Amino acid sequence: MEQDILLACVAAPAIISLAFVLLATIARRIADGQRRERTIAVMASLGWCVAVTATLLLRQQIDCSAPEAWQLVIVPIAVTSLLLALGATSSVVTSSATIGQFRWVVAGLGCIVTAMVAMPSGEGWTDQLPHHRVWMAAIAGSALLNLWMLEQLARRGAASWVLLVALAGLAGPTILAAGTYAGLAEWLLGAIVATGILAIAAMIWRDSMIWHALTAIVLFAATATAAGRFYTYEDHPSWLYALILLSPTCVALPDVWFKDRSTFLRVMIAGSVAIVVIALIGWVLLGDSLLGGAAEEEW
Image (cartoon, rainbow, N blue to C red; front, side, top):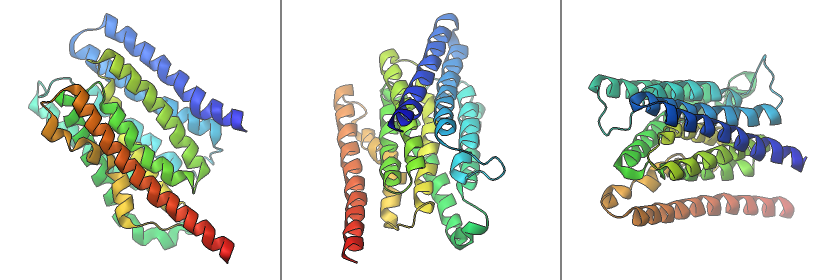
């Protein structure tokens, strides 16, 4: 079983991500201008989505007649990320203001549709319907804010390491899922591997458009947080869910005041904030799990 997990959650997403990075490398050599930029952005986004989908298909038996909500979210995530990648540009201000504004319209609509798909439905979920409205707003709002913050970070000269911030944003949902839902945790592990490969490629290239894969990563992290909430009987504080949802924004926000400093200092500050945020999330979640286990033993 451990070998199956290693193959599906580590080897498969790593190999697929590397394959698409290779394709992006070829495109980088033979194309030029905006055509090259958009091709690389599309390859990175598509590669991430394919890698994560492969993990899902290898580890989960999907009922095609009634799939789970958390399994379906990859569809609107992929569509949204690819549409935004097609309009990608490396410029701080796009060549066409209309195109730049329309990209954010697409991003907003994609966040809303993804939030709707992420909500579990059916006869077994009627008791959770009152929570859907709040969580749809939480997913769509947090994802859009995170996307905007990370894109601004990338355009302030952080394109080579912004995916590391997106990677940190996957830590909270993974910790949340690890103690409640093994299938979701495995899927998140595959997402972490795929994100790590693209993050390394972005650091090597520095001026590449690989960072545009963050659209899919941010949306996935938000929906995984919602799945960690709905697919468990445990109830955590609202502020904790908010911290998990907004962790990329929390990590990226201090850079607004340090944008003119050296890259080393900016990375160190972002890394320090990420460690604090992840440690706080882990401390609360693991503390709740330990206390819950102790209570059960006493009972």
